[in-house]
Length: 353
Ligand SMILES: Nc1ncnc2c1ncn2[C@@H]1O[C@H](COP(=O)(O)OP(=O)(O)OP(=O)(O)O)[C@@H](O)[C@H]1O
Ligand SMILES: [Mg+2]
Image (cartoon, rainbow, N blue to C red; front, side, top):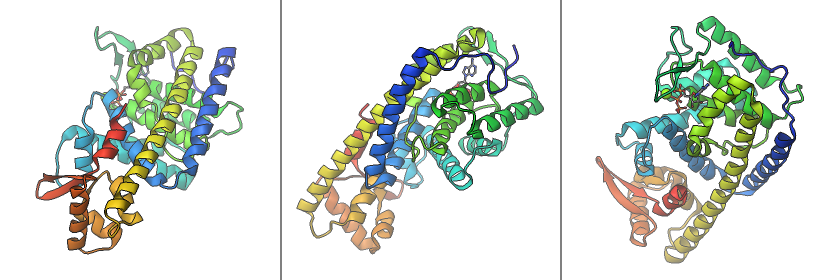
């Protein structure tokens, strides 16, 4: 059956169950939005959360790596680990998309192409050769054949773009995001990275519609934990037009993830407070807000970062980091020719799932 254009006709979006779940999900999401706007060091939170998301989203694609590897790659000390590099590319793609929508105020086909290009590091762009099919990974049987020609794909993307930017259709944006994700994955416009691009598109859409102000709500962990259901639902929708289950699934994800993100922010704030108190008490002479924040911003830091962040000489920066290591607030490790300093306490908060 051919993929329908948006908005879908003849489907009931506002069922009783959907409306109930929508109320709950909207409330928790609003709570997250309100709470995140009160915290003083937002950039630290966004940085940490996007890295976590990059790790979880890439894991769905079986790109598995550790926080340690990711942070080492991020220090740009020449550390090499392929999967961690792909995760870092994914995080860059979130930023690319976020900056783009902040600047332009809409999402279009080019935004989507740009995101995919940043994840994949190539210029393949929209599929030009036919043959892409979604197969059951166990039996090899074809489950679904997405649009095949570039012309068709562009037509569907244009339709999706119009749907995304239509703010007068009276469909709740949280419901729209469910439809957008389904439609985008069904168009499957690229040879690869459709899942990851689609998951970034979700958060950009939420930001664009001001359901959240910063890119901090990500469903990948939830999707990863319920992966089988995620895949099964695609096919269920297609066979039976069963959008209710799909919408409920995504809305539930928004609820669970918003709650978890609130808890994560709380844990980070608590850890930062404890860290700060210990730092001030034990090393009052070198304490500064800039120094403290740079230990949290980068998670793993190195001498040159501190030189820059605190406007001090290399010798002073080295001495700061060594003193922090001595009192147990950092741990150092040699990577290539450089020494990196790890904020293990923050890592523990971020990896405590
Ligand atoms: N039956 C289906 N119909 C439509 N889309 C599907 C179906 N099954 C899976 N998908 C989507 O396709 C994505 C996988 O496509 P692709 O391999 O291009 O993306 P990826 O980013 O490389 O992988 P992944 O999503 O596993 O990280 C899945 O994440 C899902 O969103
Ligand atoms: Mg893939």
